[in-house]
Every structure is written in structure tokens, then in C-alpha cells.
Length: 118
Image (cartoon, rainbow, N blue to C red):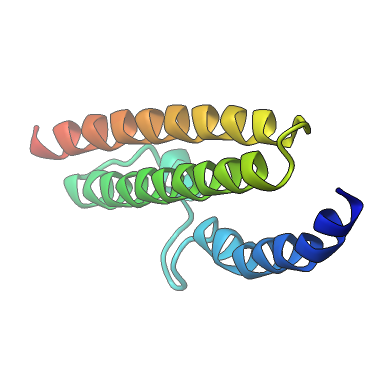
């Protein structure tokens, strides 16, 4: 078992290193645009601001769904490589959280899209 862990460890570390930059980039607003916090602070006073927030939250929902898929793949890998470890349980928990975040972002997007149409 130790030999398997030693052989797989570089692979798992490589996955984490490969995923870190795209996940971090997804958290940043596009350059030149106000941050969501700035738009909310200004209370999204016009339809264009509501549309911008709807688009932003839609993208956040897509990113959360991508994260859920990544964590699901990690869960499958952990189940295969470390079947007696609890690491897969953490991945399952992250999948559930990512999916909940996606649902919340989608709800925010729908609410702002509805406000833009008023």
C-alpha cells in the first residue's frame, strides 16, 4: 500500500497544482468592471447594473458547477487510490457545497434579471 501511495502522490499533487490557478481566477471580477460588492453597494439602480449582476452570478454558478465536477472526479480518484481513507468524504462534502453555491448564485442571477426587466 505504501508503494501505491508513493507512486500516486505526485499525480495527486499535480492535480492540485493544475487546478489552483483556474479556481483562483474564477473568483476575480473581469478587469475594468466594478466588483459585485461595489455594484450591490450602489444598489444596482438601473437595468444595466442588474443585468451585469445577473451575468456575473450566472458565471459564478457555472464556476461552482465546474468545481463540483472537479471535486467529484477527485472523489472518484480518492476512492480508487485510497479506498480506506476519508479523503473521498471531504470531496463529497465539497461537491454538495459547490452545488448549493451554484443554486444560490442562480437564484441571485434570476432575481437580478427580473429586476432588470421591471
